[in-house]
Length: 372
Image (cartoon, rainbow, N blue to C red; front, side):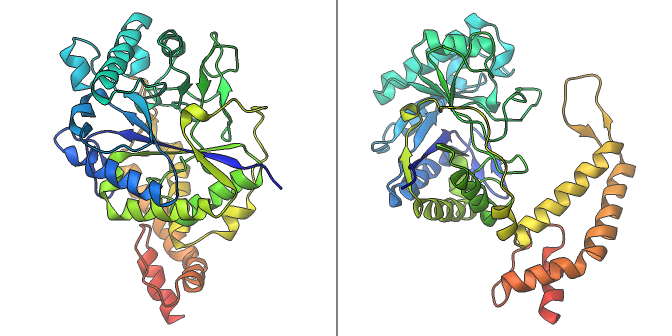
């Protein structure tokens, strides 16, 4: 009998709401109330516990909620209003502050949660995945045992996790490099990613079928841990709630144990398993095809973009001409060359069922399929 896979669900508890995507807005308290309640309720249906990574500014808002036996962790954004009241933080990413400033922010957040919730947080996640060597040093000195911030392969102006392989397992961090294994008393728990680099999360626009395939890839590869991450505002949307419910339903059919982040130990090896394409091929549907096709052509056209030199930005600058080129490529290749291919896929997958336009002409191809 194969060993049970440990599944960690970390929920970043923040203000905001969800429409077509997650919007972080301090004026919208329902992200920390309705969203958090829905997340806990859905997880409870499958006997799953959630690691609640709470921002200090939302603690007073949620103090009356029943958090059950879910884990309590700390989520830090330097612009947190409660930190600002203490003359801490600002509007830069966490890693842009020095060691003493980071330690002061994390210490203040820990104190606020301890006082109001009555639990001393042992797990942590940085806003925008923003961590450096100073962050892990501060966490260790303040008694934290687990950090859920690693986002393998991802880099932006706020963070850099490019040294970690996509299917990275938990590791004890090195005092020399936060992306390397070492002997510090802090376990890094990387988020799990699907084959094109998106986080396994109900917020991932790739769709449910691909998320199921991503979990199956980890499961079939014998990975000991799968880490699902989401934001509480996403659970204010019926669409994201439905995805979360169906994803957990699929996962619960396997030999898994839902556990908290602080229950995770380091894996025996950080060597990533070989990528498995078969689960993704088996689960291709109209939504995944639409997303993949659009994403592929956007990347193709990025070669024509001019990159900003004035600031460390990973976002390309587009001119009106570039926008026209993107549209021309999509019209020429997706709407014409791929019409018959996508039409057959939609016909096979969606016969007799309503089709949602996921962008990139799905509904148009659905109509073609209906006539085929």
